[in-house]
Length: 148
Image (cartoon, rainbow, N blue to C red; front, side, top):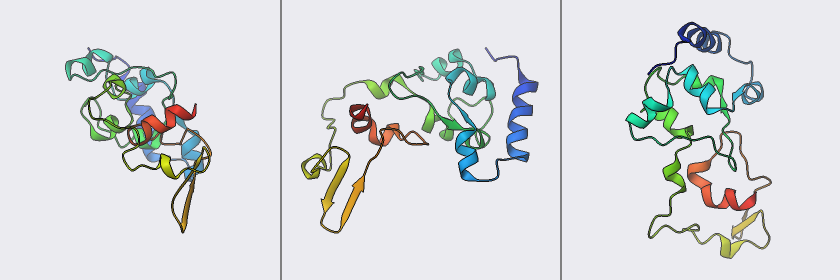
């Protein structure tokens, strides 16, 4: 079942493509924070995702935030678009997998304090927030969710 707002969707995406925000800061402000809005822009429904075994949901601990300029690069009506799959919350990511470890690089052993990773003598990584503008959920799922 496709959502019947093709004119609004086409206009919105064309507007973003033809009149993108002037700089990266403006693009990060002009975001989509609701999965239903994201799907509507892409002429998709939750049923379309389910037909492709994608278990989408609106996360509570790790909210959706996708710049419209990024959405404008996605393919319309394609639930398997690789850009969409990068940002689409999928319930399968919350499943416990045998053999999965939350700290595969043993970085927690090198954290003198929460929010600091000091794995190498000449480098220090400061994580000041559990949220990033691109929402790095797939990469930092366990560590970011524990920061909340």
